[in-house]
Image (cartoon, rainbow, N blue to C red; front, side, top):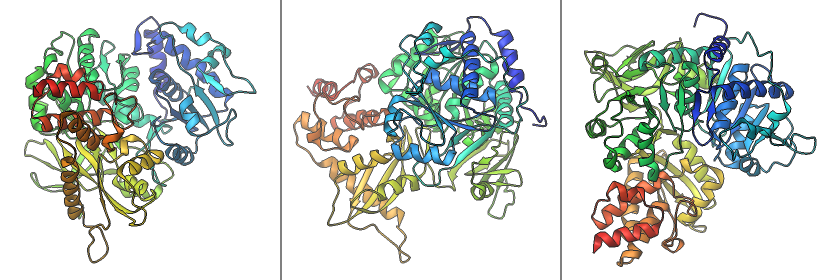
Amino acid sequence: MAQSLSPIERIYYSQKTDLTGSKIFLDGPQSISYRQLFDRIERLATLFERLELTCGDRVLIASENDAAVITIVLALLRCGITAVPVNPRSSRDELQNLIAKAEVKAAFLDRAVRARLELQDHPLPGYSIVEISEEKRTSLFDRFNRSSTDTDNGPIMYPGVLKSVSPSSALPEEIPASCVAYVLFTSGTTSEPKGVEITHANLCSNFETLKKQYGLSPDSRLLNILPLYHADGISQGPLLTFFVGASCFRPMSFQLDKLGQLLDSIYAKRITHWVTVPTVIGLAVEFGSDYSDAFETPDFEFVISTAGFLDETIWRKFEEQFRTRVVNVYGLTETVCEALYCGPTEETRRIGTIGKPVDVDVRIIDEDGQDVAPGEIGELIIRGDNIMKGYFNMPAATAEVLRDGWLFSGDLARTDDDGFYQIVGRKKNIIISGGLNIYPEDVASVLRKIPGIVDAIVFGVEDSLWGEKVAACVEVNAEQLPTSEEIRSAFLEQASTDLLPREIAVSRKLPRGPSGKVIIEQARQMLHHSQKVEVGSGKDDLVNRVFATAAVVFDVLPSDLSAGSNSENTKAWTSLAQVELILSIEKEFQFRMPSREVMNLRSLEDVIELAQRHAS
């Protein structure tokens, strides 16, 4: 962007002039109108002054409360203060590492997150703490008028503290375009997590492109339930919504048994655009056959598939089954959101590709930095106004990927004679599982800290629904042999469930070459052999077969499970694990679960009843 000042002030007052009525900004468990949003932003601006936060300071947000996270991030953006949203389910070590690396001046934390950090009722030296409390009432602003515990003897409580502050009458007028809007960390487990710095100029540049490419207007209604601590969740959801003056819908966090409810909301809420990931598109194909008319509304435009590789077969099946169009896009956290677009118009789309670049320059180069011919494979590099400022406080890492204005993506690609691009692999060592970027070395570093584990190698295993799953082979100490449950429990003390390997092979010795480096292909074979042994164990009766199958999926002992095991009392029972359980049960008992039955599975008792019914 050529301008030296951020356009956020102009956008803010333009929206405030046009959208002061009761129009919904956020629709979800805690809905917010634009009128309420502007009031909260201006009250938060006063709170920021009280906390002595100024342009460029960093504020960490870790909360399960979507409405709170979105409001706080928008208020920080309007005031030129840098937001650092992180996974609220991060472990204590991850959170402490990110707080230190981001050099935060304040943190907005759920009570559970505070407890995990073992904080007392006073701020730790160096930064202020605001505790986010539950909002039980969701329709009226008066829920903010409950008594605040903002006293000298207790923590500042949000949203209660807003009662004690007046809306600011002097919001910042001149925010530099170079001001960092947010920092998103690519990981939190290693000592050197990379914090991607996105400036106001980056953000608004990409939003102009998204608005144009998707045909967005104030009448648009975006459905996006992706995590708010990821770029496609926060930027291509509430921030883009505010930029356009549209409405954002986040009715739930994703669970497989809510897939039908999610699809039903497209008609009920008159959704125009659904931003999602390839995994959810695959789950809709696999389990959503009873909702094939979900997109047959006069309002709906198209599905936007982001944050991962969209399998061509799944792409075609989805469009045929649901009779709607998928726009497949490509981008990185380092490009705000998207850089290449396949669709939505017929002339700009070719199934199986990521389309063409829009408002960016793109090249495919060889190892010598020379452009390759159409059809040849090379590294995709990108240049444009949406390219990140860099990695926070990491000049060497920044210089490695930003060279002469070009971002080196680490993705291998090729283009055809018509200018359509296709991703064919990766140079960088990343596992993309369900739209999440997972760095193998982060996972391995956690595994190596577990008592009894000498070394670990981590890699991705192909999966038709998730793209890839995290897998690991570990070398253990013969005198201190950990069980799979001990490994899982120790891992989750240090890292979030997102990083937990779904498959682990335990060995007394990892296969190594002459230099001592682990031979990854032989490690993969070890994993396959280990799986066959585990799955084959267990008794022949139906109930024990269910428990044995579930034990492999959840990485626990069959004796740790009962008919009452469910997502509430079984720590590893995530959406990903539930899908694995369903597919494993279908394979074990040789039947296919109808989608309606899948939606009703709440516990292993339901699985047992279903298996008995199909076995009889």
